[in-house]
Length: 462
Image (cartoon, rainbow, N blue to C red; front, side, top):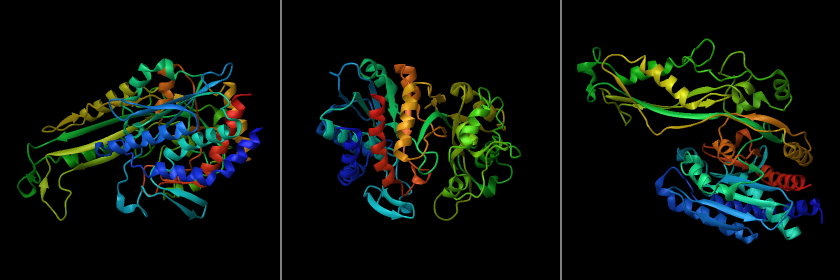
């Protein structure tokens, strides 16, 4: 029996595989909202039960937050690779609900200009991607009666809420989780139909601050003019984060640790199939708005950012309320590259804000600190070239090594906690609307993603 038998089994089983994914998508596993804790437990239980049906020794493991799912197979095999596959079963909140065309947890197949899609929260991020690997293992087991190598399955339930339990769990179970290589399917293709292996990820820094002005909300007729308005002040400070002429971040020392992309790597990116017009159009843009003199791919993959994610204060109800608010609030995130140190950068940003405070206002910083550095994958390992060739065979298009604008801290944690390299292969598209209303996953991505993992498993074991 050959790989072709496994691929034929995947093709024959696509409809049942899609329905299994639909079952998982119906579970409302929103990790950031405590009201959905039972649903997160339910998703973990579903995954354990599903792994058991294909002979994986799996169980739900408690944490102080949402549970982990850990499974093992092939422990009795000798002289075979040991890979760990990671995915997450939790999803983002669905707000604003009014912008969904259909209920987010009632998934459906839908015809679009680009083919059939699976529509629903978590379809692309990350339940659909997670299940591509599980379904590849199911097909392999159906044909061969066993799997080609030793595999550890590691599914997290807190990725969308900062992974507070992840590192402690990895530290406590390091011996069990350690493998030759980690496989992660939580990324996208550089362009539609272009198979991609992510070779670098940006890091992440989160912070939040409140500007406090008058002791209470004030009547704008009594204090408008002489009174300091925290909303006006926070707007001024936020505007000072940026140089409008160059598009750069204007915080002193912000670019410490940032490196320019080597010329040979830039040439590779230029030929990777990225469609600039499609990328911008999917978001409703007509042009790029980042740093001048850098391409869109450089801005997305190799340059740092400081983004304002939320700014609020005062009265937000119906009608008008003529007040000078006592407080104004701001949430920011930074994407990090190169050797940028999240702790050092947090200090620089806070110093920038505090230096611009006027009399009669103070800043209160959030102490729920989160930050992780950028990650660079070791693509010189032979497994990466084997996987690239396997992907090229499946998609009938040369697979590429690419960067990634997002942050997946688990890739860095595998290295820092378990001293294990990670390979990131995903089949999402830029228009999947992850974290947004009407999220979808192309049925083609699901189908060929399953076939791709079967080919990669075959390649890694030769």
